[in-house]
Image 1 (cartoon, rainbow, N blue to C red):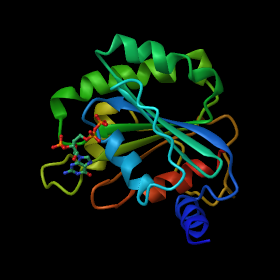
Image 2 (image 1 turned 135 degrees about the vertical axis):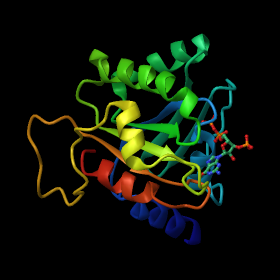
Image 3 (image 1 turned 90 degrees about the vertical axis):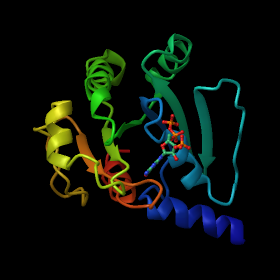
Image 4 (image 1 turned 180 degrees about the vertical axis):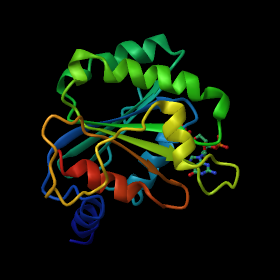
Length: 192
Ligand code: G3D
């Protein structure tokens, strides 16, 4: 019973209770995807760990399947995640907010995902990670670097749906400090 309670409270805290979905965590290596997966994993409940490839990882909680892939410079991984695009319900794209040198590379990867036909109707949650470190860029700086000045809007109540506007939004977070990403997931959950 305790384990089930934990599963449901984890999903509820992310706004994913009762949802069934396949969510991809994408981003450059070192962005924080594996750390985020481990944070969701916590007590290692209902975890499937195939670990067949060093650039990918997977977690299943309740009816939600989370899968991570590194982007940029890993051609084998790219082939792996491309296979998933046609069935994915949501993308969480994680950016290291400390690594300004790699913002252009992150932007290229994000743009390529946003323009792919397979993901044309898929909601994108972009997480600017590592804001626990003082030299992390601000949300405004990251929006500018990624070309995300015009996004969907952060109202996650679902009451103000904007027909025809692509669901993409940026949330700053610190996965390690467990800050910010739950709000992002709640925003994403309204589209799942
Ligand atoms: P990846 O799976 O996207 O490749 P990882 O990235 O989850 O392996 O994280 C890469 C590094 O960033 C790790 O450091 C991890 O601890 C760190 N990291 C992840 N999230 C945060 C965060 O919120 N704040 C800070 N300060 N660091 C974070 P190491 O040193 O283990 O390589």
